[in-house]
Amino acid sequence: MAEPTDLRARAEQLDRVDPLADLRQRFVLPPGVYLDGNSLGPLPRAVPDRLERVVRHEWGQGLIGSWNSAGWFTLPLRVGDRIARRVGAPPGSVVAGDSTSVQLFNTLVAAARLRPGRRTLVSDVANFPTDGYVAGSVARLLGLDLVLVDPSEPLALARVLDGHLAVLTLSHVDYRTGVLHDMAAVTAAAHAAGGVVVWDLAHSAGALPVDLMGAEADFAVGCTYKYLDGGPGSPAFGFVHPRWHDVAEPPLTGWLGHATPFALEPEYRPAEGAARLRVGTPPVLSMAALDAALDVWDEVDIADVRAKSLALTDLFVEACQGLLEPFGVQVVVPREHARRGSQVCLRHPDAYPVVQALVERGVVGDFREPDLMRFGFTPLTLRHADVLDAVDVLADVLASQAWREPRFARRAAVT
Ligand SMILES: *Cc1c(COP(=O)(O)O)cnc(C)c1O
Image (cartoon, rainbow, N blue to C red; front, side):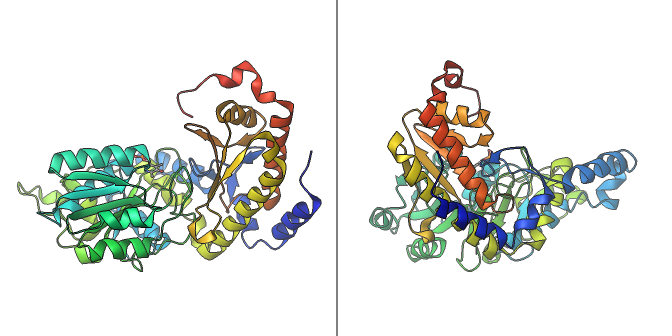
């Protein structure tokens, strides 16, 4: 079974003129088709050498002196500035460190403290679990009402952006449906109601153009191990708009967010700008891996990334619609480009074993409850032809019913 030849010809033509084609060689890629770079990006070839140097030379030889001589102390800010360029933020407004969950807690409380007396913390009813759990805890801690809406319903959202709004927090791209929200329009609506906004860029940083300053976003957080390829558990990042640089009060007042950490003063005085989002001693090894991973991004025009991402998802959708619908597979993706992230989900009642059977054949996607197979499209490493190869394998797994083997039904801890 194979897709129509005109799709194959289109994919090959797109690969011939792809301005990002050479970047693939800068990564270590397993055989098969990796469609899970939205969960964990592949290993950039520059990373192992950098880690070797940091471990053997900076740590092994330099020891404590490396905090100064190797620039370990300022690494979270320098890496933050490099991420800032990817998300439309000025130098000094982004810091790398901690996990997305921690950055979210720190920025949500800082945001709410800018709106004393207001009552509601508004979020997405279907947000990523950590975002929902953290918002719930922040609401309880500060005595706010947590209001959950479906942000893709403009009327529902407009109804809760009222005079009670303290903070609105949303994911820029929905981790499950791939819906991309209009950051500028939603931020403007929340501002008109007098609230402040915290965006989660987990599925947009490195996947598509993000313009935090253009959208007037107040705060943002994001992952670096997804589209930015920073490695397993690589540090997250936090953004504070310059208008709040002198007034934001993050609750995690660790010593490295202090204006002068080594003065060892008894009173807390926050550092300037996003540096006040620093908490404790940074994980230098994973921060260095992330720093090396970002080298590739210096050569990338994000407009090319976006154009290729849309071409890849369009191809995948067309091939799936042609080949997979007879097997009861439903394609879940916003049709309009302006509302689409860099992923496509397929709905099927046996999504879990189908994904496991696919992985065994080298096509790696993931399963998301209750019945979704999720496929992420990373333009730095994927070829258009890879996308069609993946759909062919999927069609074969479904046609042969190979996924029915009992071993594919066993659940692992991480899905
Ligand atoms: C992946 C993801 C996270 C991850 O949070 P961690 O603290 O890094 O585990 C958070 N939010 C969203 C929306 C995500 O997609």
